[in-house]
Image 1: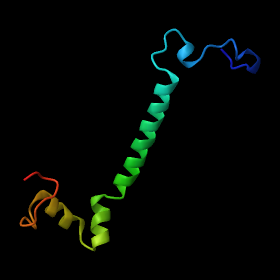
Image 2: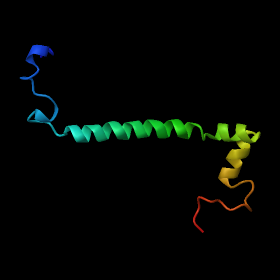
Image 3: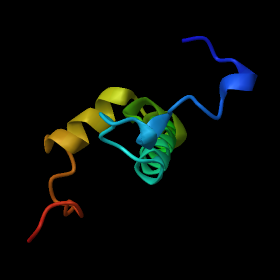
Length: 82
């Protein structure tokens, strides 16, 4: 059906449709979740191994070896429980 401005009052949309499984509030939450996901992806990109290595002035493999537990093993990993 074509979107006719004169027919808008008669066209059912969103939660008004009998087969709708979502409502407007839920769709708003979906938009918020997707925006949060996009922001987290952008922020995570700033913490890539390459960016960390570049900011510290070392090679990427140095960071890889640290995270793999090959180098600097005497320094405790803050992400691992004791």
